[in-house]
Structures are given as structure tokens and as C-alpha cells.
Length: 215
Image 1 (cartoon, one colour):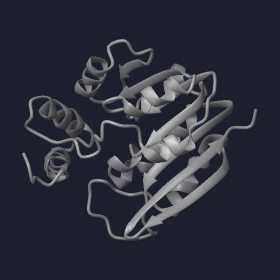
Image 2 (cartoon, one colour; image 1 turned 60 degrees about the horizontal axis):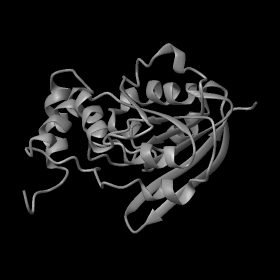
Image 3 (cartoon, helix red, strand yellow; image 1 turned 90 degrees about the horizontal axis):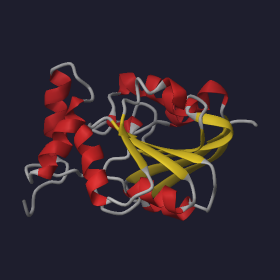
Image 4 (cartoon, one colour; image 1 turned 180 degrees about the horizontal axis):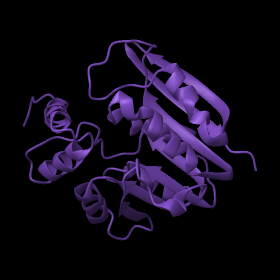
């Protein structure tokens, strides 16, 4: 697959899934096909996201990694000292993460961000959301953002890392990068804004933002 556009498979599978009225089914197809060498997962760098490693400091308590994929971010968070739960909607992604890290202390499980386990509400000291909401169609962003915010317990912190765009800016989906108002919307469910970093590197626009729930 040398020379192949790394986004090609995700765009193809997302288009087919959305046309069938299923906004999340393409994740399973993408990871399953990647396991057989028939697709590329474009965000699989085999390392934790650099905006996470720049930010991360040792901590304690429970952490939740949203849309954990193949596990690199979750393993990093666990290495900071957190008792870590990591979930993905794709069964293949969870299976592959467990295979990659067979001795991991991370609890990997299959779950749907839009319909998460009820016991996760206000249950985590640290919630890490890296480019998962933006992988969903725009009409699902508000619901997904509210679910992410709802995971943070009193005294806890939410870290959001996402691609960015201006309000009304063009989208060449997937993904659907987050606008300033969508980043601000993570104050849903009583969270308070911490720091919002608007990071620009040439044409690349990213957000790194923190939110906190009062103790």
C-alpha cells in the first residue's frame, strides 16, 4: 500500500456508512480491514498524541480515554499513574489494543460515546478526548460533547485535543473539525473553562483545551 493516501480508506468507508444511515459503523469496518492489511487507519501513529505528552503530568485517581483506538494514548495516561479505562465503539479496535498491550493495566472495553454506561457519569478524575467528536458528523457533535463533559467528576479535569476550523469554515470530511463555539460547548453539564489553546502551524489548526468541574 506504499504511496496510498492514508485518508482514502476512512473517507470511503465513512461515506458508505453515512449513506446507509449509520454514522459510526465505519469505525469497525476500518479497524477490521486494517487488521487484514486491506485498509489504513490514518490516525494510527503508534505513539501517543504529542499534544497529550506535552501536557501530561503524573496524577492519581480514575481516568477515561474516549475513542481509544489502538491504545497508545490510554497507555500513556496509565503511565502517568491513573487507573485507566479506555473505550472504543469498534470491537476490532479494542481487540487489537489488547493484543498490542497484553500485560496492560488499562481496562479496554467496547462502548458507544452516544450511549455510554450510566455508571460513567461524573465518575472520572481525568477525561481525555482526542479527535473523537470530530470523527462524527456535525449534527452529532452537540450530543457527543455533552456526553464527554458528563464523564468528569467533581474536582476532575477534561482534556480536549481536536482539529480546528473557523465558524462556517469549509469541511472536507471526515473529520469534521471543531469550531470555537463547539470547543466552548464543553462547558456543558457544569464544567468550567480552564485553558483554550488555539494552535496554528501553517495551514494546520488544532485546539488543546482543558475544562474543570468544581469540587
